[in-house]
Length: 396
Figure 1 (spheres, rainbow, N blue to C red):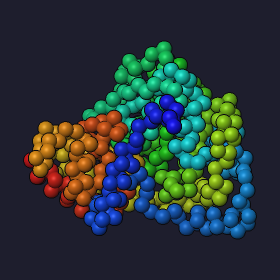
Figure 2 (figure 1 turned 90 degrees about the horizontal axis):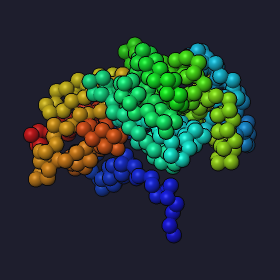
Figure 3 (figure 1 turned 135 degrees about the vertical axis):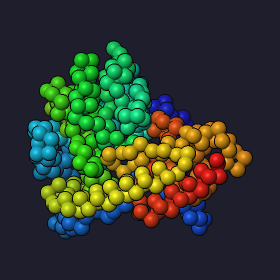
Figure 4 (figure 1 turned 90 degrees about the vertical axis):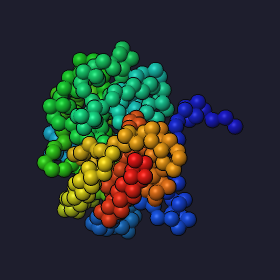
């Protein structure tokens, strides 16, 4: 049986491939330090778990409206207003089964066959795959290492054509941890407004920012942007709720209405008990979030300091999320156990032999790096970086 062209066009996930290899090694009893984690290594705060149990005990196991519980959508709208000054009616909020689901919904609603979608690189590897499924064409604009991997508005302007429909914007960024300043975002917004294009703003890491850096949504950059931006967020990263699968989007009324209609046929509502858990997260104390963020920040600083002591490697200091792009291109052309290192995939494969799992940068559109997550214990970070240094010394 032949599958459809749109399914066949999707590339396998290099992240999952590396993870599968690491798991197989662990199953064989081998020690592997995994830097591939894309989720907090903390449990969901207890008050959120208790709220879910209470909802189950009270029989909250039926369908909700396809776009989510009214009280949850109302609370999300309130948070947008309180935290970013963005006024949305609850009808403009659509709750879905994770931020990834929201991203797919937004693309499916906005991208026509043949439309061009601009994606800053390095990028989260799912973006171009969703563009493919929606019939669009990804156009990549390279971020500059000397500017924390952030794109230049002039480069964005050059990439715009008559076919450009949408810019995918992600700040704080996965995989780089880059956080755009308000000034930088307003400059990018000006290009979008001049070109008359839409923005899908992925803000799932918006609360994981460090050392006084602040988050500014591109939807705040003027009336045009408010009416031409779909903002995506959720509880997965902020509240250590990845498995609960709750994300949402805020969009202009007609777009939100169309997405709600589509979701009603595609999946219906996200899990009811998970919505009650998400409501408890948004209504509750953020004490656990602040503790988690402080631990992430400590790990971030430790990792940066340790990497800078490894001759031949480098990194760009991230301001948000929980990732670091490790610059490994000085290893290219050299040999490890007789094999030539040709790119980030080779580095990832060879490091796995040393008991370290990283994600090759080629998966994110930057073959000069590999991605490390610090959503693992400080002890594992230290051991993993020791193994990486040992590998580098063998290469040099």
